[in-house]
View 1 (cartoon, rainbow, N blue to C red):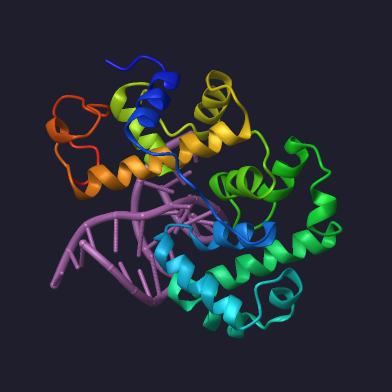
View 2: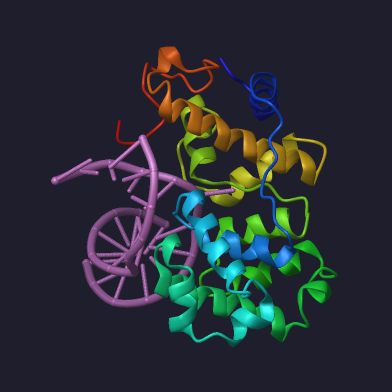
Length: 221
DNA sequence: ACCCAGGGTCATA
DNA sequence: TATGACCATGGG
């Protein structure tokens, strides 16, 4: 039986290679990816990012200038393109209205987090993606995989409670931003593995999320 | 033909 | 506070 969050991290590190996660040419590209990947497979996000790049539009100024309709066309493979075009514009507006990415880099983490959450289209996970992977702040990202995993193991009582879980991981895992990033990446890697290869509890690689013989890979299984 | 993916907002009750 | 509808493409 798994008892602590640190124990989960240790097991994941033992069974999977170190993950290189969220490669991006710039902080801004990471932020764009964070919006585009909302409820969307990453491979589709890559297509959209490539589209923006090859159009020479993967920059704060260019996206800000684009008409929503044109932007939507460029990010079409990422899905929800009309919605996400608006959200990207909202993000750009926030960045420009506050002096740009470098100036925001000087903000304290809590202030920056509140600012990001104030953007229409940026919720808790997207904000924390940006804080951790674009600004390298000591913030852990709680995504649906994380919630499902911890809920199954019995670490959480199965409640949503995003903030509580985030704080708890940040308190129990030491090492700061690099460790938070690695932990999050390993959770996603693990989720992909069990989803494809071992949907059943008894076959899962780590015997990690086993509980009452129920599959964890998908809530609908 | 279905299921779901590295969510978030808004309208209802 | 808590559900439900909605957004939409692409791969399994």
